[in-house]
Each structure stands twice: as C-alpha cells, then as structure tokens.
Image 1 (cartoon, helix red, strand yellow):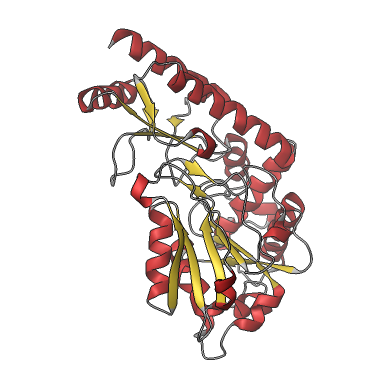
Image 2 (image 1 turned 180 degrees about the vertical axis):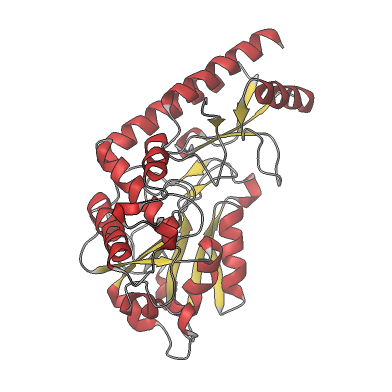
Length: 360
C-alpha cells in the first residue's frame, strides 16, 4: 500500500513508524493478550504507558518540575472554557490576542464566564499577520493573557512571545506544539489538542504551572477543575488510553528523530520548499500570511482566480494529494505540513505546483 500524500489540517498525518509499531502490538500489548484499549486504566500495564507519555513529554519539552502535565478530553474547545473557569477571578479581566478564528472562539467562551478584553487583533487585516501586543500598566487587573501560537486557517504563527513577567501567559498550541524547542518558563499554561503533532484526536495535553492550580475555585465541577487532574495524575476517570498510548509512541519517534532542534530544522526546510514556490510564481500563487508571520505548519495560499483555484484542487486530488482545500470559512488552498509529513511528500507537492503553473 502506498501512503497517501496527506496534508490534512487535523486529524493529521501520523509517523508511519508509529503506526507500524502500534500495528505490531495491536492484539497483544507487551504479552498481555489484550490490545491497549482493552487494558484497565488501573492496571500496571497501562500505568506504565501513562507515566511514560508524561516522562517523554517532560524530556522533549524540558518541562520544569514546577509544572504539571495533564491529560484531558474535550479538545482545545473545552479549554476555551476551562481556562477562564479556573483562572478568571472576580474583578479581573482576561486579555485575548485575536490572530484567527480559534482565538475568536476562545474569547467567545471566556466572555460567557467573566470580563474579557481584546488586547490586540489583526482581524481587520484578514488575519494576515500576528498583531503587536504591548503590555499596558492599566492591565494590572489582568487574570491572564491568551494567545493562539499557530493559526491553522490563516497560516500565521508567533515567532516570539509576550513576556509573562506581569501577566500569566496562556497559549493554545494545538497546531504547533513539538514543532520547535520552547522555553516553558515563558508560559504559565499551555494546552494542545493532540491531533496535529502529538498523536490522534481524543486527548488534550495541558502543561500548567503548579502555582496556578491554587486559583481553581472549589465550587467547580470536578471534571472542569485542573486540580482534579493534577491530584489524580489524570486518572480521576477513565482516560483515552489508546490516544495516550499513540501519543507516547509519537514522542518516542520525536526523540529518535533527534529531538526538537532537529525537528525544527526539518520543519523549516519543508516550509521553505513551499514558500519558495509561492514567492517565485510571480503572483500565480498568492500567499495569505505576511512574510514575518508565516507558519511552519500551515502554508496557506490562493491562486489568481477562483477558477484556477478549483482546477488546482481538482487536479491535485486526481494526483493523489489529500487535504489541500482551505478551511470552509475562507476557502483557498492550504498545505498542512506537520512533523509527521515526510519531506518527500512536500517535494512532490512543490513539483505539482510548478507543473500546474506551467500548464494552466
């Protein structure tokens, strides 16, 4: 079987080596006579998987001991509510930087829970760039500042981050976590749905500074309280065991690839291949994001006409490329080139783009 040329935005491509390893152990995990999803989440066999996933994540991201690593269900969309429910105190204001649709959704949910403010936005410019954020002295009552580190729909990415010296910094990193090294100390809470770079859908990773756990109100429902997960090693209820197992395999794969510095190098090389095609096309392909905000994970572009865009997507589909259509909200084209997308697939897409331009 030939692997698909998969450029889906999420759920996204998983490393082939991970899928093969999971397949090998599918019916008989570590001699248990059971598949991972059949194991009790209270068993020693699963406990090893669970703890290893946390350990691997700590090692890859160099997560300090002052942070908890939590596994939560509900995707990033649940975190849009959990963050303000746990951290937005009475009389405080939650600050949000709008850089795309997902940050808008995060703001919308937070506004249902408490006071919010738009700290910066590039919406009036069709989210073509990451807006400048300047912390103001008047923000002394800010509960936190929320950013979305990578914007899948618009193809923009933060390349440097605001300081968290005065205001706790919260980041939705669902679509670019593990794409490059991070200084975790620059953040107070990071959350990421797994289905881009971490593994399959079904589990969300939350990395939270332990000091913030004290802010969770006692009256919160147990399953919406970060403290519940931290106190029970994310085993208060049945976790998504298969998703966490596959996540652990992805983390092993990332280590074997040379860690995040090597992965960043590969991501930069893949992105350059596609951006070079766009930049050298003399306006045939039109990139959406400003150069200084371009994403390593999602390359978004249009063609010079709607007719050309439709022809491009149809011929790309016929050539075996999957997932190149832009998000339904804005259309156009998008190539999601997450960690697991092989550079050979990116090179084939670049060849197709050049060939399509020459023939159209």
